[in-house]
Image (tube, rainbow, N blue to C red):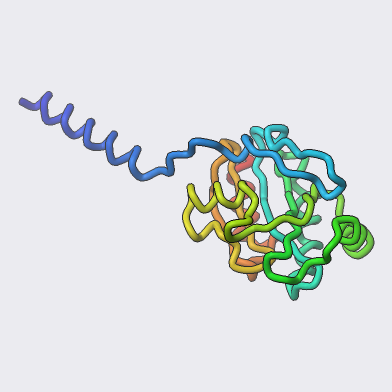
Length: 182
């Protein structure tokens, strides 16, 4: 009888354990997105690394966060962090042409981390990365504004999301990044 109870409890624990996690059919590394220069960024090239995905905009009050995104990139890239900026006009605060965004980022913030082409991040026209994020992590993965952050762990799933007000170099984000890089 004791063995039956142990087996039953084990089965129940296994059932609940699996039901509490998202059932990712795809992971982040299964996607591709175009770079700001037009080349394809195969996210599989980032496999095994943590990725901080940030939707950006040139005319936003949070645009100065580019500086701290660059600081994160400089500080953690050799340890396995990718900072991926995704310029977006979903909130009507981005330039209209990729080359203008690229020049703006290089001239004003000396950006050298990867940037994508201007991309929708919410709604029906959102890039498949953002649709995947919503499907697997829920509404908290949908950007509420520019400079919304999604942290991808080394397994290619969403670790956490951060509001636009949360600075990229905040302890909240850096501690989580450091835990993923250990």
